[in-house]
Structures are given as C-alpha cells and as structure tokens.
Length: 142
Image (tube, rainbow, N blue to C red; front, side, top):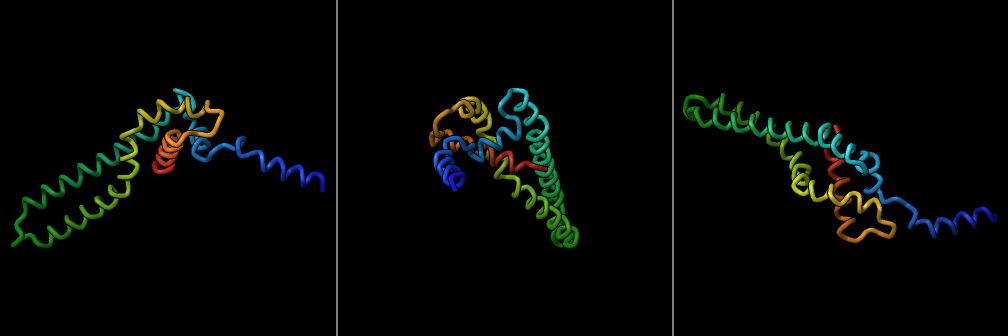
C-alpha cells in the first residue's frame, strides 16, 4: 500500500522529469551531436530529397513527352503516359510535407542544443521546433 502511494506521488511530480516525445525522437536519431546531425542529413535527408528530385524530373519528362504527342493520333500513348505521370505525382505529393519541413531545417538544427539543454519546460517556439524535427524524422523513415 505504501509503495503504491509512493509511486503515485512520484508519478504526480515526474512530468518535469519525463522527456517529451519530440525530444526523445531527437535522441533516437542521435541529433544531439554534430556528427549525428551530419549522419542524419547524409543518410536520410539527402537520399529522400534525391528521390523526390528524381520523381520530379521523371514527371517533367513525361509531361514533355505528352506535350509532343498528337491528341488525334496518340491517344492511347497519351493516356498511358498520363497515368504514369499521375502515379509519380501521387508519390511526390506524399513526400511534400516532409520536403516542406526541410525549408527550416538549418534554423531548427541550430536550436537542438538549446532545446536539449533546457531544464525547464520548453517554450512554445522550442516545442514547435522539436515537433518539426520529430515529424521530419518520422516522415523520412525508409
């Protein structure tokens, strides 16, 4: 009985000791170190962006090919190429939220050390940054 009461008392006072899930994600990805951030960029972000770039290039090539065809004589080929382009656009659309998060990545990475050293509750801005980083980490998982 005493141990249950002690445990519940500790649990009431432990929110300050608990690690926020977004901060936990930063540790899981080893973003607390410069080496970890470089590894994350080279092993996850760059390949992800490269896949998106390749999809975009393929869509542009398909679009150019479709534009060069005659709507009167090449309807079947136009339809096939349009379906292929639509599939690739769908894949790229799924990637867009993560790609959008990359626009603030440099500024967000600059805040990681401050966020991880924070002894008190995170500020709203720090929480938003931590959440963006965690969402990026989750979004670009293979």
